[in-house]
Image (tube, rainbow, N blue to C red; front, top):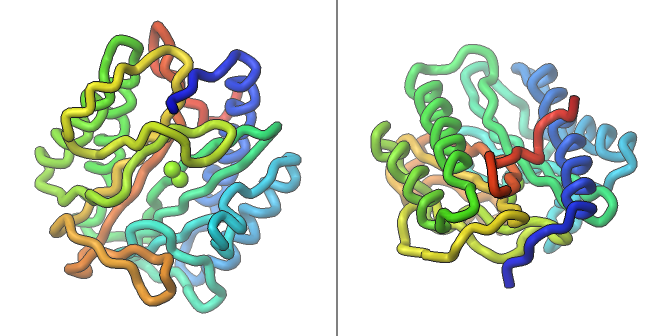
Length: 250
Ligand code: MG
Ligand code: MG
């Protein structure tokens, strides 16, 4: 069932999203060669707790971190570890959720570690651009396939692979609510209505679409070992412009 959020629910989601944005602001500052993904996780945890929120990911289906840290060919669900140290030239996707007042904000961003290759930079540019193309379609009167199609078109224009098995989702009282949102056209005519909130999250690959899950049963990687990028915002549909809930509040 797709719910439409009340004014009060949206207020709390906006606050949760602000906290998520604070984490990303800090990630941008501290991500550099030599830092471990466990350290990134600890920093995120501290910010979430300082702001009286709950790390949504920690314990979710048993996930052991409060961020997902996915490097290079890792697409999503990378587990933070003291043994995973960032190196010059890596790209890392940090996905984080915060629950505030019972409501969830969910946002992911890919970051360059030091100087990266041109092809990785292009992958990140394409993925971020596809996210914003999707966000632009999050308007009452459109259908879900409008968002999916906008993402697909940008991915195709850059000749990037599109991860098929994972996608966006409704978000609110829990992290994953209806509807599921594909990052390519599937013909879903579900109408977008004001008050609907969806985490839009394209995952694009430099190579093929195919993915596999590692033996840790969490980390999803590209089958061909080529890099992947991931960008995500939690977005509210209104009768007017789409509203990003996972940015810093003024
Ligand atoms: Mg996320
Ligand atoms: Mg999400």
